[in-house]
Image (cartoon, rainbow, N blue to C red):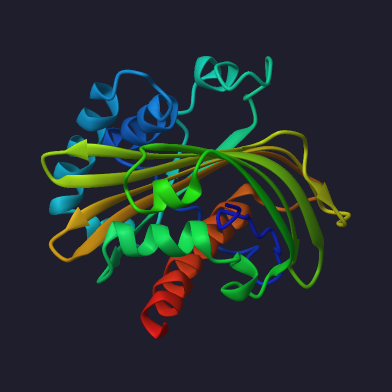
Length: 256
């Protein structure tokens, strides 16, 4: 829906350390889940969700500060139907989140509320669904897609994006798991002299946890930083942005 939007305002972060590399298991899992979201056979997503749950059970706290991830393959990108893309400069980050809200409560807001009501960075948002959004939000349908145009104001730059989003419910022994993946259909238009964003890919997986949920978000970008701006600044901002947006989503739902 565009909640994954990246913020590359680098002021004040040029001296930050790079986030640590994700453990192999998490790195593999986020790439695997991203690739398998649209698969006709639900088994890979079910297995991936269960493995992610096992990994997060004792390590969710480790993910809250974020990790560097890089396991997104050319094959998974080509399967998007976007043609061959060069991933040589790919950089990614993943962050976990713990919520008192169930996956269904979060999904209702993700799908049915204009994000401009939730996130101050949005200055324009248009989403055209392909499928029955009410049916999906109610958990009665397990697949939905959307075409999204969004614009963001990050103080030092404006960012315009055109994205494809796919949403899926997966039935597991844990309960219903929500997965969402996004990719840019064309390079972002950025009013900045220090960054160009050619590609972006985003994954969100929300697992039921009692009456609440645990989630992982991952964003991968192919961006060209102009000048002496370090890559780790962008990665730390990706992590901050995903974490902040997860918290704002929780706050909005709780206040309704």
